[in-house]
Image (cartoon, rainbow, N blue to C red; front, side, top):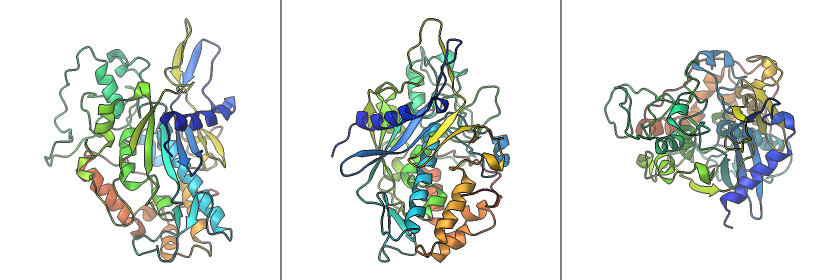
Amino acid sequence: MNISGDEIASVVLREFEKWPNKRKPLLRSDDVKEWVPLSGIVAQGKNDLVCLAVATGMKCLPQNKIAQAQGVTLHDWHAEVLAIRSFNRFLLEECYALASSEKASSEYIRFRTQDEITETCFQSFALNEDIILHMYCSEAPCIYAPDITHSYLFSADRIGGDSSMELTMAAQDDATPWDLPSKIHTPDDLSPAEPEVLHGRGYFSALGSVRRKPSRPDAPPSLSKSCSDKIALKQSTSLLSSITSLLISPKNVYIHSLVLPSSQHSFTACARAFSDSGRLSPLKDREWEGGYAFIPFGILTTDEEFASSRRQPLGVGEKIVPSNISTSWTPNHTETLIGGSLQGRKQFSLKGASRVCKRRSWKLALEIAKTASVLVPKVEEALDINTYTSVKHSLPLSKRREVKENVRAIALKGWIRNEGGEDWPIEGVEF
């Protein structure tokens, strides 16, 4: 069954419309409208499309705050990243429900048979084979410029990533490339010089390069990578997070199509950023052990526009500003976040831990691994350990680490890890 970009986008947009106003951008009384990016994960079954995760958001922690997060505050709550985190939480909850029942499968998840399980493909669960996954984004990943002009490039809150840079370049009176800093690695650069990650709003003509997320010029810098870089990596690691990939096979949990508004689509930029003919060409037909492979998604466009996008109509005297709240939705739960923590709770506090944060996801995964129906000792051993960093460096995750290292070495050069503050325990939160 062929599905259009309009159909996928409509499923996400309809779900957003159901949210109460407190979870949406505000229409202020002083002729100021708020805008926010929206993203969602949609499952295509045999007969219909179902939204499994929706998120809004456009901010991340600066690098100097990462150590305070301690697994309870999100590092990055841009809509695209938060939608993927929400999707992972939904899958974990599906595994938990299935492991607690006497069933062999649910609508989305099934137990793998003993014949399927091997030393490198050890996971107890798999996504049902008849499910195809799509991702919708209301903006070109990591972009903000109400009018994409040279003057906005350095004063906006959200810009970065190849799709957005292509749009920015197209809007310049003079598109002559700027000089790059001497240590920057471009995709064709094979020199062994130490890589330097590009700032999200700087050197916008350096297309195809890994970029960190932007911030206001006067704000502390972040080492979190642009959403287009993170989505590009997901074409090799699957949509699963490290924790979820200990329980679910990555084999068919890849994005089939990415849906962008027609106004935000650049064929050249998408090919450069995501396809096997662009910067990811060294990965073409690449497969790894553990069920991983490079599986590039297709690009679909939609003429459906998100009502709270940066392109919403403005009346005389009205202006538009970014929203400071973000929302995470799945069929099971909805949360509103500010600063990566639950709205109304202190940032970095245990009580502010979202359901999609690392610590609560780890705890839920351990509960699943301990159920009698799962019985994969090495997975339980990897999860039942003192610190989160020990989980990330555990043997069962070695194949996933290998995939990420390979992709960063040969395709996404200049990827500097956003490290620090992962030496924390599982205690202090509920799952």
